[in-house]
Length: 525
Image (cartoon, rainbow, N blue to C red; front, side, top):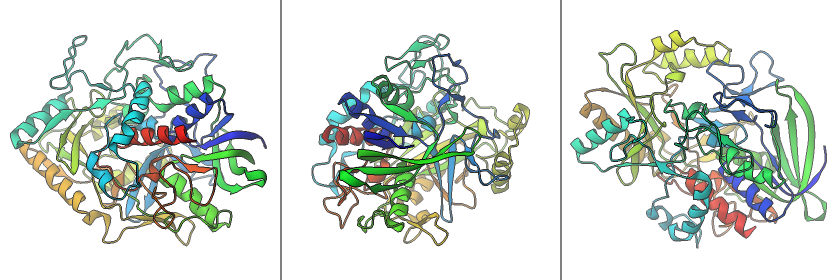
C-alpha cells in the first residue's frame, strides 16, 4: 500500500496522540500507524457505529500478551501487554490504539523543578512547560480520588482503604503524604456519556481496581478516547495492527515509513510503506529507540547521533509488597478504587499506594516459581478460573516506587538483533533503588507486615513501567539524538515525541510531562 500524507505518526500514546490531534487541527493530512488493536471496556457495549474493537483481555486469553505466538512463530500474538525481557531488566508496555495509556495508572503530576537543572537542553524547564501542561489538562481532566483522606465521596460514601492506610503510616513515620490527581471520570457508572471528543463514550469509575488491565468502564481518560478520538473527528486516519519496521529518506525531501500489517489472528496480511513530509516517532522508549537503531544498522539512517540509545532511565521504578503472613487469601479491601490514589513524597523519590492486582494473582507474588509458572501458563493460553485466582490471591499491600536514578543506561542491539541494556554498576545498585527498598521495608514494618521486594520480578530483575530516554534531547548531536523541539539532528522532517526523548529520570509519573513535551513539539511543527 502506498499513500502520501503530510504527517505520519508512529504510535498512538501520549506523544503520538497529541501530535496527531494538533496536526489535524492545523489542517494537515495525518495517518497514525499503531501496532496494536483497538480495545474497549467490556462494560461498554460496542455500537454499530463504533470502529472495530476487542474487549480488553483477561490473563490467559490468546490476545493478552504481545509477541510471537509460541506454537506458530510466524504469527504475532496481538495482545495488550508486551513484557520486554532483558538479562538485567523487565519492561512492561502497552500495545493498542491509545498506547501506554491503556495500562496506565492514571496519575497526573508535574515533573519536579529540580530535575531540569542538569541534563536538559536550554529553554526546557518547569516554567516553560506550564502552558503545555494546561493544554493537556483539557483532555486528561485530572481529579482527586473521592474516598481518599481529605477527599470525601459524597455520592457513594466509598473509601480507598489502602490510601487511608498509607496516610496513617506516613503520619506515624513523620513523612509527607498527599492525594494525587488521576485522569479518571467519576461520573455516572451505569449510563454511557459522550465525553466531547469525537464519538467517544465513557462510564464513570466503579472502583473495580482494574485500571492496569484495561478499564472495563472506559472511565480512564486514555489517549484513544481523547486526543485520538478528536483527531479522527477532524479526518486523521488511524490504522491499527500496523507494525512499523523502518524509516528512511525518500525523494523530494519526504520520508518513507515501512510497515507490516497483521490480520486480527496474527497472520501477516501485507507489507508496504507510506510517505510523508513529516514523520513523528512516538512508539515509546523501547519502540522508538529500537526502530532508529535498526534503521541505522540497515544503512537507512547512517548519520544518527552516537548518543542513540543513551541516557536510558527506569525512572527509579521499584514494585514491592507488604504481606500479612498470617492471612490466608485476600481479606483486605486493597484492590478497590483507582489503581493509585495517593503517595508519600520523599523528595528524590516517592512511594504510591497500589491496588493489589488480584486479576493477575500469581504474577504478583512472593514466590519466584509462582511468577514463572503463572507467566508460562498464561503465555500457553491457560485461562485461570475465578476460584483459582482467589486461591492465589494474597493479603498484600503493594507499593509503587518512582525516583531519580542516574539515567546511565544504554539500549543497543545485541548479536541476535534484540534490544538489550547496558547499565554500568548494575541497575539494582542505583542509590535511589536502594533508598526505595529501604523506605518500603520501613513502611511494611510499620504496618506489621513482611516486606517482599520486587513482587513482579522474575530472577530479581527490576521491572520498569516508566522507561525513559534512548533518544535524548540535547543542545547538540554529540549529547543527544533530538533537539529541544523533538527534531532528529541531521534529518529534517523526522521527529521524536515520546518518553524516549526525556534525558533524565523524572522521579514522578512521567505521562503528564510526555504529553506536555508533545504539545510543545506539535506547536512548533
